[in-house]
Length: 176
Image 1 (cartoon, rainbow, N blue to C red):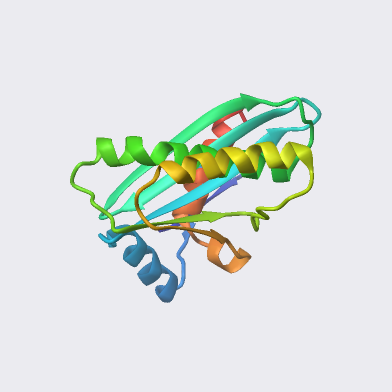
Image 2 (cartoon, rainbow, N blue to C red):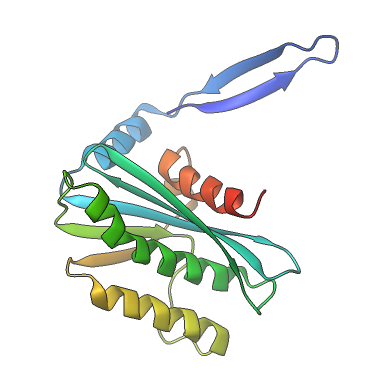
């Protein structure tokens, strides 16, 4: 996977495009995630328009060489709550699992793993977060496969095209 970097020269209109190649071990890890038949790996992310309560939710699904990206724009009465947006993104990602499995019949994972930006606190005391947590728990109850939610470290995000796809989908949903 290559990162695209654009440079513009002020004297000409020509664009020079160069690519930053990820380290070999990261490339190998990406290929293992992409071609893993047993695990459906998912990435969720949220973007927001500040001071408006508008959130973009993005989800990326990867399994057995198949990838799918989903996005959605939502409106919330809670403004500038990025953690809340991440909870919504997790719930949205889990909601998409049945549709992904239905649309990609060649993929039959044995378990699911979701990577997100936050550490989910199931007993969160704030009312606005509890509402989203209840939604996540309802979505998880419907799934029949074993499920794990993990907090992504900055190292795991670095040079990860799947996380980047979820991030870009969340931004695109709100027009950023």
